[in-house]
Each structure stands twice: as structure tokens, then as C-alpha cells.
Image 1 (cartoon, rainbow, N blue to C red):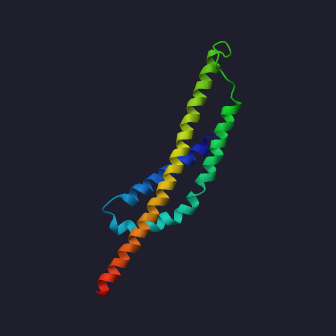
Image 2 (image 1 turned 180 degrees about the vertical axis):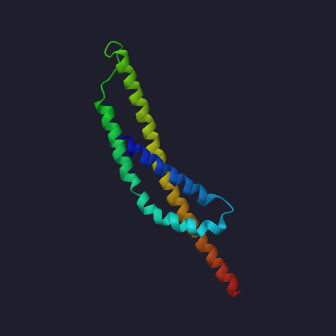
Image 3 (image 1 turned 135 degrees about the vertical axis):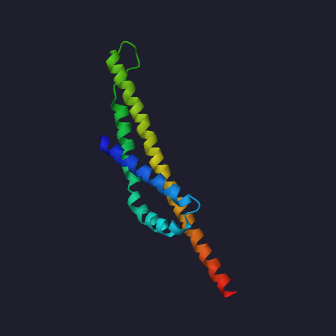
Amino acid sequence: MALEWVVLSYAAAAESIMVILLTMPGLDGLRKGLIAVTRNLLKPFLSIVPFSLFLLMDIYWKYETMPSCEDADSCTPSEHLRHQKSMMKSQRNALLIAAALVFYWILFSVTNLVVKIEQINQRIERIKKKD
């Protein structure tokens, strides 16, 4: 089960690195290559959305089927500790899911904006050459 979270965290890290590289000033020479690589990776990274939804449903199922330890007499101290650890892991994993989805959305938006900026710059260059 931990492999799923490792895959999701690597994908979120790759998305964040690509966003940083696309928005970093001074990389004009590499920008065209970065745009091409990012545009080609957007479709495979789209699989993060259903994967994240599946993992979110898994968290919800674990939460719904988890025994409750709300009363002091209903659980032993070890069961209470295990319940608290499970809740902390679920919250951490939910944050990871949210981060992966937000980074994908940001990467998609930034890539589209950078492509539009490149197209506008090319139009400006063509207009300047005509004049």
C-alpha cells in the first residue's frame, strides 16, 4: 500500500519541479525544450486525477470502517494509539492528494500560459520583421 503513496509523492515532486523550471526567469534558451517536455508529460500526468480519487476513496473507506475509540473505556491504550496514528496518516495522505492535484492544475495552467506567451512573442517578431 505504501508504493501508491510513493508514486503519488514522486509525481507531485516532478510536477512542482516542472512548474519551478517553467516559471524561473533566465532560462530562455531551455524554455522551448521545457515546454515541449512538459506538454508531452501533461497527458500521462492526467492519470494522477483518477489515481488520487481512488486513494481518496480508500482513505474514506478506512475512516468509515475504523473502530471508534471515542470513549475512554472502549479501547485499550494501544488501540487508542493505533487509532490516532491511523488518523494522522490519513490526514497526511489527504494533504498529499491535494498537493498532487493542485500541482497538476498549476502545471497545466502555467504550461498553457507559457505557450500563449511564446506564440504572442512570435507574432510580435513577425510584425517587427514586416515593418
